[in-house]
Image (cartoon, one colour):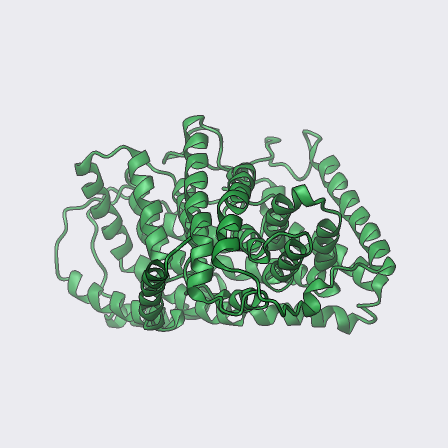
Length: 517
């Protein structure tokens, strides 16, 4: 049990992090500033000579002055296409529209409640963590539905409710690098990785599911480690440090009931989903399938199936949501369906605005050749250190983990880091897919411990329903063991995959240039 002095020390550290984080400008403003800085610095560096040679062209790298009349005119003429052609933009919107139908119909919420309602007590913790992972399909569903329901289920079964909050929070936010299904964040991260890789190799492509095998494999060790933390560390500590209030008001948190109509609609909609999956598998099995490339290869960038992943996500989730919504009466007209898509699109407004400035920044960063210069100079420095690639990648994991204490948005953080890390590590033979998964490891693990995380205030409110004195220090102290466990387990899993040369995902390698796979 922590002493008062120890709690004050924890609160002081977390308070310092919170104060520093609150002084950081809005992430969109950061990218406006970054764009201006790139333009100004490019004007200065364009007057200098560098001996670094571009690995693709074989020519010395020359920095272009982005403040010259010619480059300003070119920027103005390409500003719209920079934005409209920004890789993550279209993919995120399309994927989210389909998820919006499934989420707006109530299908996702019903599925999560059904899983929790049939869970025996001895499997409650791992199932809570698992459901948290699956909730990635519905944006913010886990925070609004799973966490309060998990707290109630722990409370109703005689376990500490804050332990349920910790386990579910770890599954939702902490285990973002581990999942059984693709999620909306995959095309976001992939888009930045591909754009960054093309600073060095303009023909390089990154598959949306380049980390899927690792994500799937990691689910098992994540569930095991978070289960252990919940049962052996968090819950015993909570009973001592955070006794429950006597006047607990559960309110709507206890609502885990699924009506007969919802149950029937869920079974039918899930049956439709199974049929679609079986149909897809049957369609790709023949060697001459139209979903394969011209050589009959399935896992190829030219294979239509690989080019249709986001579209399939839209079709599958949209169809299932449509069937469910009609059967339960949620969708009574076409307007109801479009409203579900419109409602979920509102959650993308901030991202869509941010993407505009991120696209201009990445254009300027690439067109100025500053990206290539930093990458090659950084690579030369890494070569001089003669570090094994395993050590270099571990350094990336630790660096991102520290940065994540202040900047928690994965897309915003990777938009800044990808143009630097991806080409720099490519220059020393490390594949973009490996750099991306290293980023996702530390980005996931630290989410749950920093008070800068967007959902921290909401989760603290959930805690206060059972322990009124709970605050930032309480939640961060609760989640710290999960962060340590996740960081260790996800890192170990990465090195196991790497050591055994198990593919990280589709068309992914550990080295650059790619080996013949």
